[in-house]
Length: 499
Image 1: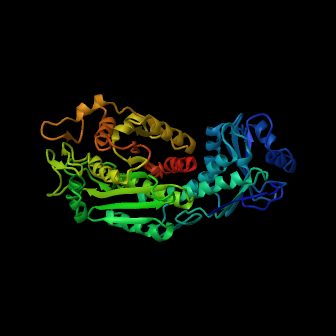
Image 2: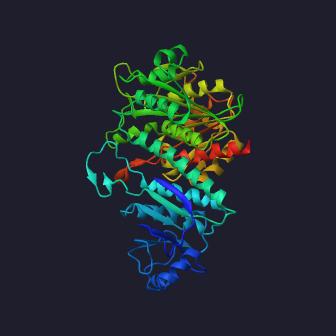
């Protein structure tokens, strides 16, 4: 799908769907005023009749609107004095409704709505991302056709955003470019996450990484189990022992900065299926454990976005990948393993395996002398209990890095919330037999998981993102969200711009 900028007359443009933002009160936008004139006061008529009140996210879809050349008119409320939330809601609703129509082309005037604290670049990015997000469907394993094409795929192929004045056109183009690149990364993360565990294995992930050498110019290296053993990654390899699928250690490098510049290192948990091992999970919703590799998928997505934006920054992506299944060779509660760092770990619960593969990856990351390390993992159900699904859990002992990530989450509309990682929690990980246990008991599960990882990052500026509540949707709307690719990409964009 193509998103472009152009100057068009909304009253005469021929398009399958015309999208206009409507304020709850006060002066309407230039495009809304043109529509009023051409359509004989249609908007005010709808407001007076109560069919639309202009509140953010309200909408009316009008087929064959009189006085216009567009086949459909989609009026979307933006509120009285629109803020970032209002525009985000309006853009999301508009995109979803658009993709439910058989429209092939569309023209959107939403970007002309003035929004507090959002310039034209940010507005175009939000609107563009909303369209890409709404259009996404997972169809590669479906064979039947539905409404709109293959398995209900939206027919939408071209969206034109109204171009602002010449002084703002460069910023608007930058916003569209960001939307396209971030959405490429989000869609890749969704696609990998939505694949079932019998297809998306560690070997499959490694092959997908190697494709990025040609498509995006990344440097990719994949370590096999023999190489991991030589590096003494005993913690990671203990998890893969219970699976017939061999573990893979995937390293992707994007070189956009100067040679010798310290890279940002992203470490993503790549558990392609997690049955819990010997500490077997309940059967209900276990199919959703294919999403346990969404942290790794988000690293793929962020690197793709960075490459498409040609960011002047060095980035390394590390994805330790394995399955966690019950087997005669699998970890048992009470087993003690030795990590790459040399620290010993008593495994009290085999379902707390994500931290076992991440700790070796974090130790490996130290060799890059990174400017910052961020690990991303669907790590704990406890984080979902604490924060629900709107926010990613953010843990870091580095106040500056934490503040930077929180700001990037707000800018990207992909929010995080900072959680404690105080030393008082470390005592919960004490073991009488090893340097540490892999769990800390019933309380503060998300915090003790982060504290476990902190023990392997003392020489680095590090943050941990627990995405267990944000990486996918369950139930009837089941599917990967692609989060936190927008947050990570904004972090990389901001880091590159500071240089």
